[in-house]
Length: 306
Image (cartoon, rainbow, N blue to C red; front, side, top):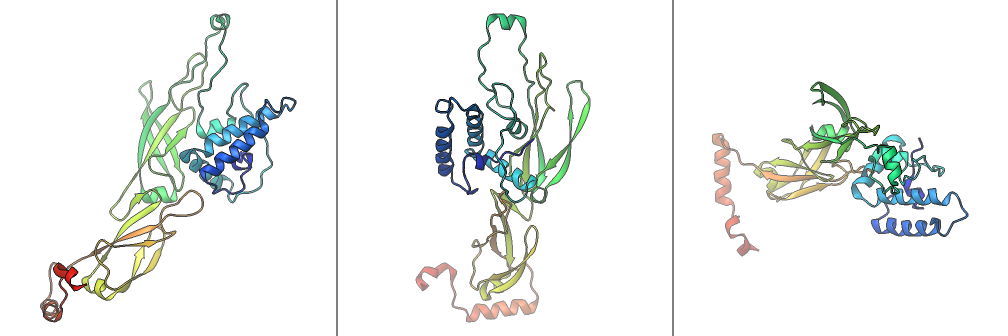
């Protein structure tokens, strides 16, 4: 089965095109290949269906992100791919490629005559089954395999192995084709949909493609400035902390956050927390007493000092 290049189908060379650019490209291609205008071109109708299919995927943020991640995962860097229509069932507006990766979508079918209905029962696809799985931020970042056990309709337990793709988004669903409830009258079985819940931990919190973490400093480090080693999710970072930084301020590190599905990353945002020792030696206490005597800094009267 060919991996369809939806961007190329819409005539888009910039894979970071905006929603408005995608919409404009769709209008141009749909007008060019509309069957009413190309009545003598037998391929125009199939091309027109591919154009609509491409727009359906790229115009929705979730499906576009999933498609982009699949491309980088299966193909690597984008290559020039010769255009080719992929097979589809007779009368269907969606190709096999679309149904495999994005699930089958109910389509409007021509109304059947009373005779057809009497002579043949309609095949009905089975219902989908939905469940959830919890994974850590690290598992989501690197990708992982997880096992999940579910009870089938006959009461038996069945174990599924789920491949978690690197960079999966929180609440995104993984589809296992044909693992849902059985169909009726020869219809296909439904799918198993696993909703991924990414859990925050003591070190990181995930928000979109940005990671949040706390950086704990001593009062003297905050006052004088310092250089610290900060552990990001996949490397050690040498971070300069400017003097006079306050609790609650943040330092943003670009391209050190979570995967964006397009080969880039979000930000690692460090929240500054200035910590005061709960117990001190006599010498430490004496030094603080001396600082108290010589310092004119008064945080409760700071606005009068500006």
